Image (cartoon, rainbow, N blue to C red; front, side, top):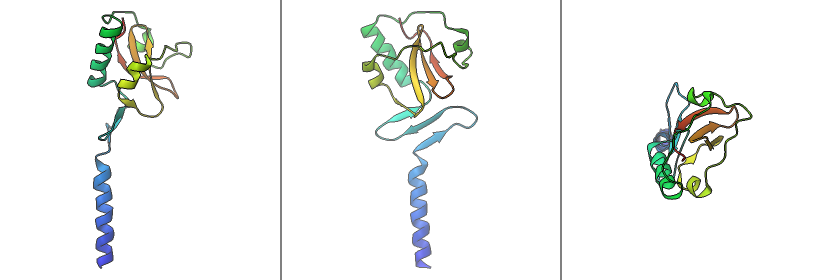
Amino acid sequence: MTSKRIAIAILLTGVVSVAGCATAVLGTDRLSFSDAQMTSGTAIDDHDRALIERWYNRHGGQPGAGALPPGLVKMDTLSPDLKGSPLPRALEARLSRLADGYVRRVIGHAIVLIRRHDRRVMDLYRDAVP
């Protein structure tokens, strides 16, 4: 009987310790993990938006307005010919770490979060880049 109680205690301890590690929003494509060291996700959160805005204010002027391809406006899948360019390394290093299989790209004046395997636009920060 004592070994059963110990096994149950160990199991419950593991469940409780893992429960706070991941959060999934059902019905959406957003998933985020967090702990004391990092936050990663599949959205451009408010913290990252503030870092992006400050970085471009210091290094590239004010964010500007620019036309986006229709697929981006609808949060659709990007065509294979629309690749975008990577964010500056110094900026990317300051942003939250992304979940595996996701990448941020600059397309036009927007920063776009893309799921690599199907090129689906997961999030979009419009007019972020001058």
